[in-house]
Each structure stands twice: as structure tokens, then as C-alpha cells.
Length: 119
Length: 271
Image 1 (cartoon, chains in turn red, orange):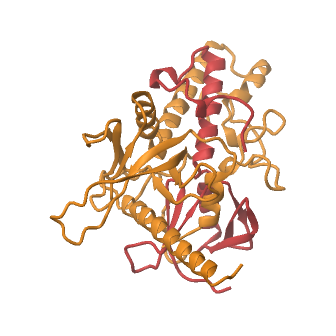
Image 2 (cartoon, rainbow over the protein chains, first blue to last red):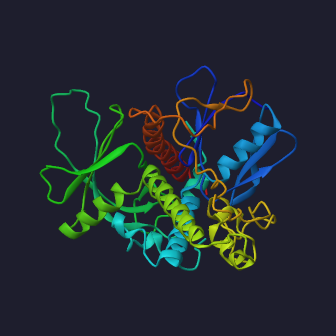
């Protein structure tokens, strides 16, 4: 496999990549139901649940940069945020007895209910 | 523009719960060669599925792949004065992006869709999560302030509540693993081991939330770009929304091409 130099942008739950001199992306990866793995030095990969052997590999300039990207990408999905929200809501409710989502008018929405985690 | 379409289709059709699903009629957007000729509007009935900040639509409810995808970022959802009743539109800040005019089958459905779509963006979620994070910190601080001696061991139980999802000890709760997958992968957890932040009245930093939109990019090679600094201001006219409108047109074209090829193969009698 050949490594190509790309400009990579994480925008909400998408990873866009560009040829370095162009304004428009040549591709994107939706970062839901994916796994970020540290590979060899300076390298991480992204793979998806329905095709775990297929890895999109990225080589970074340094190990530090590699770790930063891994941390950011692990938290990039909407699903991750949803779970964080449910977690915080639950904790606040336990501590204060109040549902913090009420002020937003979204406490009844199905997507925020605490239940068995859905895969 | 390439997309990991198999993964996208999988996410769209897998049984992770949708935030909303139902039939809507979608206005067909035609490209007129003669701008002043109005060919009349028509609508196609499609099955729409909202998951997170993504609105998928399928030809049929049972279709195995979506025919389109709308990324709900940098957009507004508003009622529109179309000739159709119960019509609403998704419009993008990016002037070049096409709008989506959708028609519900009743007042209640229209209102529910508009509400759901208005709150679907990643940015909205992030706002709520940040706000809750702040509230949790404040709740912890006021609790800590109630204790005369913050070093008492009885507060060790409470320590757990102060921790954030990614630092929870495994035995307490299932670790909220990256990207919504808590049973996948052998690593067993994102929990970078240890400890809960210490409860000394301060409070260690919460984990970094998903990075904000930024105009500077991190690159995988070359200069050590501080691509992940969270302090960059968000620009109201974000270049990224242009990326999303590319995705929309991409998806439509790609599916059309694949279909044509399949139909041709069928004609030629290929399996």
C-alpha cells in the first residue's frame, strides 16, 4: 500500500481528506460505528464494524500527533456524544434530583433515554 | 468524492435506534436548462430515517440501501409556503447547497419532524453536552463545599460520580467505548485505566469533547499543526458546510450510476 500525503480535517463526525493543494475534499469517512486503533509508530487506523479487516491507515508526523488524533477520533461520533449526554444527565439527576434536560425541553426525547445501551 | 458508502449504508440500516422515521414527500429538484421555464413541481414519496445528524432517505421502507443522505449541519429547518400543505424546508448556510423541501402528511407529523430536525445537529448536541458537563461540575463543587473534610474516605464512593464516561472504572459501568460501540473490540475499554479525578474541591479537567469546527486543518504529515486546539472561534460561514453539500450531490449521483450499471447488466443477462 502506498501512502499519500493528504490534508485531513475532522468536522463533526466526518473525516474529510484533501489533496494538499485543493479546496475541495476528495473523500470523506463517516465516523460512526468505527474503531480507532494504534498501529505501529506514528500510525493509527480506522475500521468499521461491518468490515473490520479493512483498515484506513494514517501516518502522522509524530507519536504525539498520532495520539492526539486517536483521542479526537475516538470521541468524534454522534453516538459517543449521545452516550456522554445520557451519562451526565443521569449523574446530575442522581446528585441534584433534577433532570437537566427539562430546561432544554428535550427530556422526553427517545434518543436521550437511559436504557439498555443500543448497539 | 469518495465516501465509505458501505459503512454509511450499514449505519443507516442497522438496528441502532433511529431518532425519527417515517414517510415524507420530497420535492424533486430539477436542473433547468432554460431558467425561465417552470416545469412544475413534483414530489416523490420516500422513507426517511433520522439518525443523529444524518437524515437518510430510502426508496421504500424495506430498501437495503439509502438513495440519499442529508447531513444536518449548518442548516435551518423552516416551514415553507409551498403550494403543498404541511411543507417544510431544510436550507443551508452555504448558498451553493440545494435546499430540501419535504412534505409531511399532517400537522402533527410536520411539527414533529421540524422539531426533530432542528435539534439534530452535532453542534446542538455538543452545546447540550457542554452545558451538562458544566452543571455536573458545579453540582460536584457544591457538594464538595458541603464537606468539612474533603479527604474523608467516605467520599471515595462519590468519586465515581465525578468521573467522566471515558475514565470510569470498568466494574462500575460498561465503559462508554468510542463511537458507540461498547462490545466491539478486544481492548475491552477506552478507560485509560485509572482513576477517577480526585475530589479535592477542584476537579480535574473533563475529557476533551469532540473538537469544534475549525478552519485550520490538522495534517497527517508535515508541520506539527496544532489542529486540535479547541479554542478556535467558530466562523459563522463555515467552509465545511460546502463539504456537506458535496456529499449530498455525490450520493445522488453515485447511486444513479450504480443503478444504471446494474440495470445494464440485467439487460445483458448477467446474474
